[in-house]
Amino acid sequence: MNINTMPAGRELDALVATKVMGWRTAHFDASYGKWIGVPLDDYWEDVPAYSTDLAAAWPLLDRFGFVVGPHFQAGWSTDPSGMPRDGWFVFRDWESSVRSTFDEDSDRWALAIAETLPLALCRAALKMVRQP
Image (cartoon, rainbow, N blue to C red; front, top):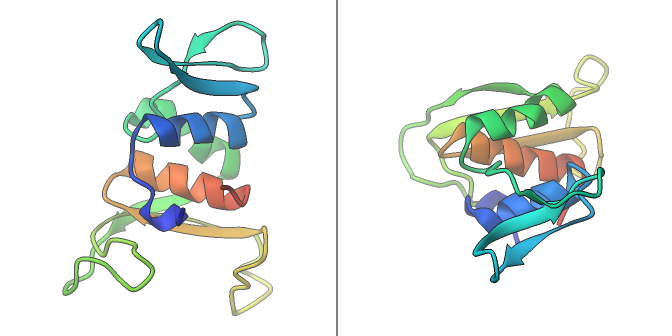
């Protein structure tokens, strides 16, 4: 699945929990009727709503030191990569002062644009760890 088009929701939250935040597991438990998982402390917890709740997504901003801001561009609703033209951008470039071009295969930069800031943070964080 293309990270740029991943929708906000509980499946994305579980992916962020396991791939970015280091949870051991995160899944929907039908017996409880909710998304639960095991972070590093061995106790079952509700999976935070990273992709829809800014308070839950804020640790992603702190962890990677992203630059965030509003993104507005007139015209088409999406560009060829599937990113929306209007919404929020999240960016991280560790080497911007020493190079003038981006290497998309580098693990040192990420750019995400989404309709909401929590969703943009989740997409950028997954790009930083190169998941899925």
